[in-house]
Image (cartoon, rainbow, N blue to C red):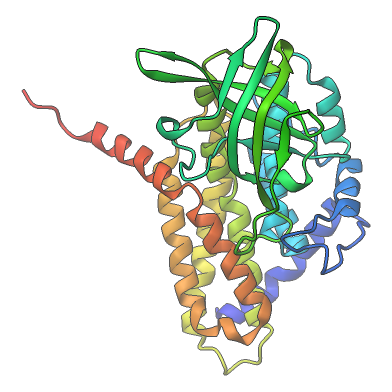
Amino acid sequence: MCFFHIVSQTMPRIRTATARMLPELSPPLERELTESNFPLTLWRELAALGWLKGFETPNQLCPDYGQIAQAAMTLTRAYASPGLTMSWLGQLLKLDILKRYGNNTLNCIEEIESGQTLCALAISEPNAGAHPKHLTCRAESTGDGIVLTGKKAYVSQGPHADWFIVLAISDEVADRKQFSAFIVPRSQRGLTLATPERGQGLASHSHCGITFERCELPAAARIGTPGRAFEEISQPMRSLEDVLMLAPIAAAIRLQLELLAGIPEGKIPTEELTPAFCLSETVSELGLLSARRLGQNAIPPDLSALVIGARALIEQSQSLIAPWMSLHPKLETLGKDIRLLTSIGQSATYKRAARLARALAPTGG
């Protein structure tokens, strides 16, 4: 069975399923899905349909990651915007952080779940990335409160957020930095947002820097265990995003293939794109299966090796599609988004996988 026949047979079924999950939403204008804009009307309609809550499992140990991955595929297919999906996924994960570790964050949670605002996570710093050894932003205790001083960079959704989860050094033990997390409102005195950074893609998923100049916070602004924010928030967040974006990336590849399927036969050799279709289906299943594995235990397993393997399949699919990217403008846009998503946190993910590989090596003796 040729590639064109496979895609033409499955497109109606997938589109029907998408319509059932996202009924009667206002389609975002093309100008809304850009790096500098955010589709607030669509976002609030998604919230009204319950897309920003209701993904908890019965035991409340963690969100239903399998359901989230499936919904992420649906959202990507509906709007052909991996950046919008990344924004949605990020809000769900930040809501989980606030519900899990926040003590006085009910107002913040309600605002995010209703689609009225966004929450951003501030970890990375200028010329330092997110490596804890190189971070310098500090949180000094004043007895009855906290003072934040320092800078953050590349804060996802920072330009549109009204709340920020900020990781800062709160102590040093045996020359090792200890990080705590704080919830900070956009209006807080001493917080200044930089001009939004121009990225390379991911429409509606914008970034900016933040400066904290003696930003005074109440002690209640601290969330999570003091000194454990990197272990409780930063590391799990990176691992969860890596896994949960696999299925929507597969959906983006499928959109590319559907665009190519609409081009008159004869211009594209079928034997070239059938393998790309098979690779996208494999990544989709890997993404859904790995997402379900995340929720099987209170502490998610390390799936970094699986993520790297899936990303290799994604790169292969893009190599197969590359000769025909110029046939439709949306092909290259999706291709850029896919490349960006597979490169995020690549070094850290590879290091985690390398540790797993070293653990397999026989010990001497």
